Image (cartoon, rainbow, N blue to C red):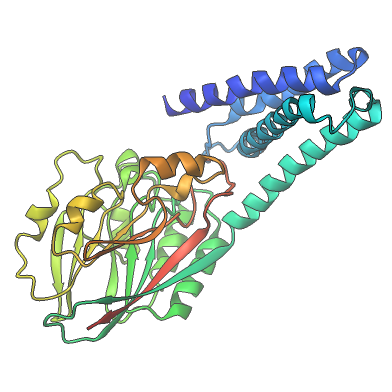
Length: 370
């Protein structure tokens, strides 16, 4: 159903793009050739865009990879054509470009070339942005209560979406960056792994993640994709040295409480009040919840800090504005009441390997207990 919805959302704008480019830029003698070329390119995603990494047939792998870039390319080509149509509406009154100029072959050629090059450039920049890990740094003050420590450094990441074709150099880059930050605590916010199969790639990734060094430990929660892939029991996490917190709360020495919730996909998950009910509120409370959907409820509890992900900040412009309207906090930091909320745009993504909204990030939070 997901792919059907995306395919329909892909085809309908493509019909608009096809006819507008044909009518605006293609001379009558070339329209048959244009039809063939356009249909061949546009058909790549509906036919091969399943993001399937298990296919061992090389031509199918190539077509599947190309289809992943075709989808964002046509998104930005559609936006380019739409912007030009808006310009034409303004031009009716303002007369920026005369009709004689617009009918010239050279004008049409250069303008269409510019639209295509712009769309390709945005996709390339988005692919580079996806594969460049950045660190978003924050510093906050939290009531110390009876904690024996006065400072805590947390590295947080969500939405890795590890698959069979996940790049080992990227995983190694991630581990190097985390270790360079020297965190006290490493937290994983869900949607870390796809599928339940074990292979050489996932074994190598598990071994690499296990080399992350902290002074306190490595903890995580599961997201909706762990449920889809059968990883909700946490076998991958165990092998990667990650302790899962599933609707539980633990006391870390006499320093703070750390809690993790099941994702909303798990309908029987506990309420936040039930999870925190066993604490005495004598120490700061840090919470992980994959989706940032209950910010107001959490802000009315004793929770000091919550970490979430899931949104990807929409992944691609202008989808980020839709996601922004769906969540109270879709990316970044906000304090509500006495609770500090952090939402990451994710380390990777699920779908087209292009990120034009947000960044591939590790969140680093230095907490001062006062």
